[in-house]
Image 1 (cartoon, protein in one colour):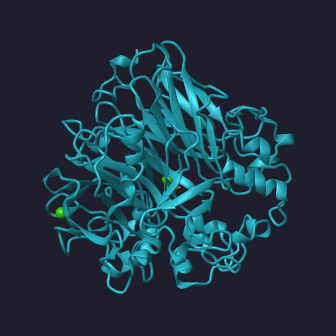
Image 2 (image 1 turned 120 degrees about the vertical axis):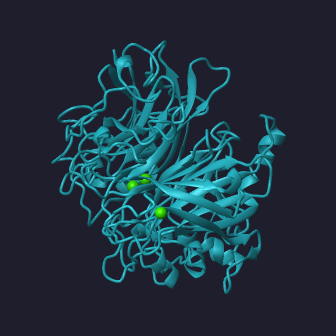
Length: 593
Ligand code: FEO
Ligand code: CA
Ligand code: CA
Ligand code: CA
């Protein structure tokens, strides 16, 4: 039985060996099932998935493409049911449409792609005494948000000149959300979702700020600008300013208008995870996933109201509109000893101190030469001005619910130390960093509103046989290899779970668990691997099940519907479909117990 394996509580399973199998591989004694696939109908009236008859209307009622972040929320009064929220980051047209002509997409294909982006809310039902979950189609809470759903801009930059367009002279109403990557779940029952690589959807960028955000100067790959002029910045230069925000959605209110919270700044938001202060104010930690970009936090000035009353919910809807936005500056304590190879300094740790530099509070800017509105809309430039620390792609971030320590996945940075780029520093200690690292941050006095913190690297990823790796000091002959940590979650025992994107060790991506405290701190174990071309996303670790979003299976250079690189999940001859998978024990007992 899997119960006999060694490990920290919650991590007692036989590690899965690295592999390149075109399937989801789980530990001995565990099994799996697909919870929901791209294209499965979730709304009333939506048809079953038929790749030969796909339409934008059908897709708007079906589960979207490329599931990334997942959240499971309780559903009171409905036994064995929970509310699943999933992000749909982007579309892979060549894997969605037979004979896709990338030079000449059709209007129907483009509109299907719009409808396949965004988020899904879908109620799921547990199977009795098992970890299996199935969608409850047509549940009244089920909802799709797409690239054309109405969103409200809120907070200090809402209504700004910088956010007004021909279609929205008020600067407060945006159609759609794009490139929703990771996210977070709030203690007041909403979810947060990060708009990440929004730059790729906009053509003909020309301003210096467009350039800082990576917006191209020509046509886009998807060519949406041919079908809606708002994606052409020559026609609508401000439309791109309306993307790159943290979205907040109340999944319990299907009629609510989702919001983009401008107080949290605009960048390539990977994730946003709140922690409450002792007096009930949310503090949200956030990374900007780009090589040499920054790590941020937002401290609300308002306290959460407990309970489910309409008054409490209306109040809590405003929590993320007032407060202070900060960016992190990290300083190592072993100056002169960081040589870019990953060799540990004399004190045995990559560690040091940090400060949170305030950028703006409400209408007040703390950045010389920038107005508060400019700080919110062009947050990267504010970080540049105040000398924030250039990090190795801050991906997901999660405060430990047990200890309050904040964990940040820094996925990789192949340009560190290359050419004119910044070289290694103690928080980003390897040049040409292929495998990434995980940083652990402790706020002074464990107070999330502190303006100072200490930090150390918890993991320096890679093959444990590579001397330039570190597993919190745990013996390296007892850990699994890991590369490119991306998403982060905690299990009920306080263990950290990490999923990977882009394994540079030659094996498929996967999911790992690691103890963060006690004698086994640093004992990293691989729990599963994903199919060819896929990234592991979303992880949720409950008592009885682990949920992962298998994103972009089959996404391999040159692959297409006609020439698939993966046969997952439905076998040869069927379209490859991004899907959510539940993993649980065959004997029905708890995960890793
Ligand atoms: Fe969408 Fe930073 O991964
Ligand atoms: Ca040190
Ligand atoms: Ca990610
Ligand atoms: Ca990633």
